[in-house]
Length: 198
Image (cartoon, rainbow, N blue to C red; front, side, top):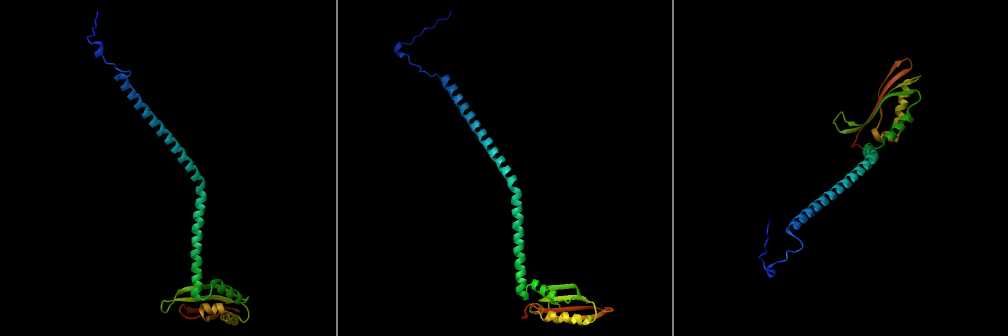
C-alpha cells in the first residue's frame, strides 16, 4: 500500500496551467512535421508543374523546329543571293557591261552557219603584268562556202556591238584554218585591262 502525503499548504500550491511540458514538446514536433510535409508537398507540386511546362515546351519545339529549319535555310539562301547579286553588280561596274548583255550580243552576232564550241568571258589576271583584265575568248567552226568569211563576219558583228566593245575593246581573229572541205575552225579573243577606259 502506498500513501501520498501532500505537505504543501493550500496557499503555497501553484497552478500548473492547461498545457504541460509534454504537450508542448509533442505539439512542437507535430508542427515541425506539418511544416516539413507542407514544404515537400509544395516542392512536389512545383516540380510537377515545371515538368509539365517543360514537356509542353518540348512538344511546341518539336512542332516548330521543321519550320525554323526551313526559315534558316531560306535566310542562308537569301544571304547567298545577296552576295551573288553584289558580285554580279560589281562585275558589271568593273567590266563596263553585265554579262547577260554580252552573251545576248554574242547570240545575236553568230551567223547560222557558225557553231561556237568554246567560250570564255570573265575577269582574269593579265598575262603581261597580272592586273585584272576583261577577256573574251571563243573558238568555233564555220560550215559552208566562204567559211573563212563567216568568221570575219562574226568578228565584224561582235566589234559592232557597244556592249562587247565596252567589255573587251576590239575582238580579234587570232587564227582561222580549213578543217575539211568547206569547214573552217577559228579562234577569236578580245582583252581590256580593268583600268582602261571602255
